[in-house]
Image 1 (cartoon, helix red, strand yellow):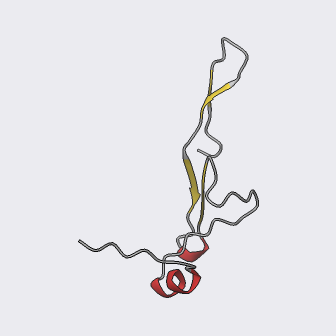
Image 2 (cartoon, helix red, strand yellow):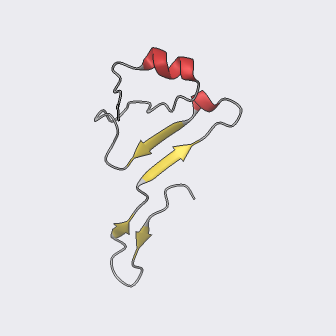
Length: 70
């Protein structure tokens, strides 16, 4: 459900709950999918929040990487 929020109709309709994550997935082109966390991912209100799926695109878009070693 788009913009799913919760409120109390017996009170003043103040929003009391909301989704922690929202996403739109383009099944024809996974790299065209977008998502956002309620607090934001980038700190920039108008950032596109791309969800890259192809390894080449992920690697070419990365600015840093973290390698965890056991």
